[in-house]
Amino acid sequence: MGQTNKLKIFNDPIYGFIGTPNELIFNLIAHPYFQRLRRISQMGLSYLVYPGAHHTRFHHALGCMHLMRKAIDVLRFKQVEITKAEEKGLLAAILLHDIGHGPFSHALEFALVPKVSHETLSLQFMEQLNQEFDGALTDAIQIFKGRHPKRFLNQLVSSQLDVDRLDYLKRDSFYTGVAEGNISSERMITMLNVANGCLVVEEKGIYSVEKFLMARRFMYWQVYLHKTSLVAEQLLLKVMKRARFLVKNDKTVPCSAELLFFLKQKETVPSNGTMLAQFSKLDDIDVLYALKSWQDHPDFILAKLSGMLINRQLLHIKIKDKPIDPQKINEKREQVKVDYKLMEEDVDYFVFTGELRNRAYDHTKENINILTKNGKLTDVAKASDHLNLKALSKTVTKYYVCYPKEGV
Image (cartoon, rainbow, N blue to C red; front, side):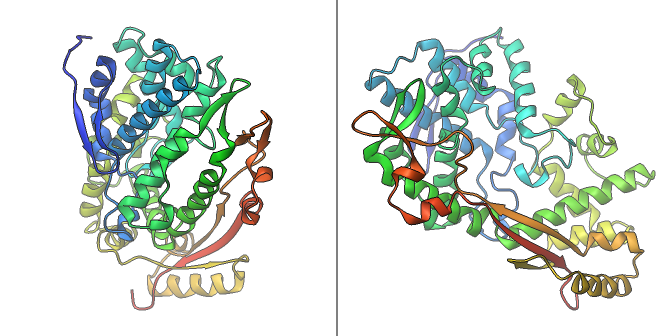
């Protein structure tokens, strides 16, 4: 693929000016696969709760690349060897780590491409780009897979304290206006080091790690798992389920050719060049156009659900610490069945339950290790004198039920 000597500077509201460090990064950003991320919401349907949350995966990817450059500089200053090739691999890997996200990011994960995660799709996009760029992404792919022999390189891209999290917490906090999620990403990065080949945090950075974990907990309960966002995303999943059902039964469901391609697929979508080409053209606009069209569809269920989302007339949702009483659920089901004149199997579109799980720090996975002044490594939950930090290692489970509001 033809190269260019043009470099570009982006003005980011979080970090200020972000430059493109090399021609490979410039050309990756300019590629249609990456430009699609301008049309993919970072936070799904969270803008229905936080009106400012309209930022995109494009914003986030650039921010991650910027922080990765900072991390590389800090580690090199501390005499950690990172070669030019490894630097290029790190920057490309973090830039492309979310390129496989579909419309509204996590909201429709597995809904359009069943059983295939966005990480798997990201890898497929990277492998396709690697062919186009004559093998320039080989190191990036190895790092993305977590298979680079230098373990800390993998951890910078994916771990419990990776560059991805350092950006999205700060960025999502900024755009939602939820101050509790604001962290000092730059300070966290200055505290990073490498010991025994692994990424660690120096002892003086322990309070920054505590704030990072607490911020992550707050953001999950206040933003990512907010009940209104939750019910909106569940409705979107129900819409796609109904649309797929109608297509399967030879009903006309107006939408873009790309969206129709995935609605026609059965339980598994063929992993081939055609699928990737179709997915690379799919974004939020396809879904929004479909929702606007479907609110006038002759099928009552598809029209009703689509109208709820377009007009923000969502289902009611209750969240409890204990499982919902089955008798109360059945009462709601019977009421909705009568009100909407539904078949028994169709009530699930309007009355349904589920679980929420939140765990800010998983000590059973790759730990966040603190490097003490005497050279010892200690898990942050043990090293911290913050009583809540051990509690953050426990999974908190809550239960929800969704059903139509009275008179809707």
